[in-house]
Amino acid sequence: MKRAKKLGKLFSLKVDSRGDTGIGTLIVFIAMVLVAAVASTVLIHTAGTLQQRASSTGQQTTQQVSTGLSVSSIYGINNETAAFTAGSIKWVAIYIGETSGSQPVNLGNVTLQLTYKGQTASLTYIGNNSTVAGYHSAAQGTNNVFQSKYFSALDNNSAGASDHFAVLTIADPTSSLSGTYPVVSYGDQVALLVNVTAVFGAGISQGQSVTGSVTPPSGNPGVIQFTAPESFTQAIVQLQ
Image (cartoon, rainbow, N blue to C red):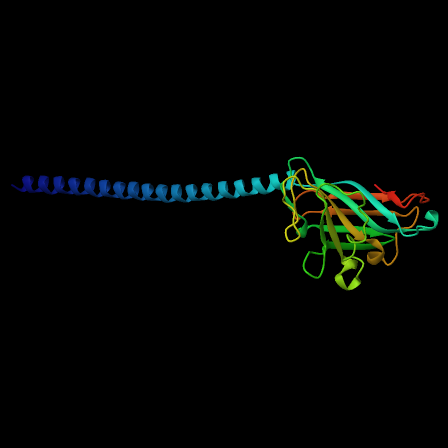
């Protein structure tokens, strides 16, 4: 009888010990599953966020690389009509267009920077409203870019001639340009009109160098770099 009780107690202890061990293992297993589930959720969320950021960054980088403006040519008009060699450039027309594959660019957000004789000016679009005509359309081309009506807003210092440029549309096949939203698309060509006399206090003299850029809000700028001829032999001078 005593042996039976001892065996019963021993058997009972063995069963309880195994049960405790099994429950502990099950708890550890459940905890590992929960940790793995939480970790997986975090990883999935992080991967989704990184993918979204990478996509956004890729789009921005593509736009930054592909978008850009190019300067095709620059012309100026001699301020002195009686003796060309004694004059200086009063007005400048900077012809620009978009580079191949570029996204549309709003000229209202473009900065035109010019440096002349150690003085640097940053110009923005003067706008177009009932009192200031800063935008002109010649979508079929024009036989004279340097008409006074195109520069009328820039001849008045109170209208901001010293820190603004006007826009003249030369070609607009996409009909994307207007006075309020002068958006340049691929194939469009416009001339940025500048009164350099108002900007720098004097015209561009013979043999003088000018540098600058036409910078969109995103993308590659158009480069401006020229030296005026040593003598002006005609009223219209090609500078670049």
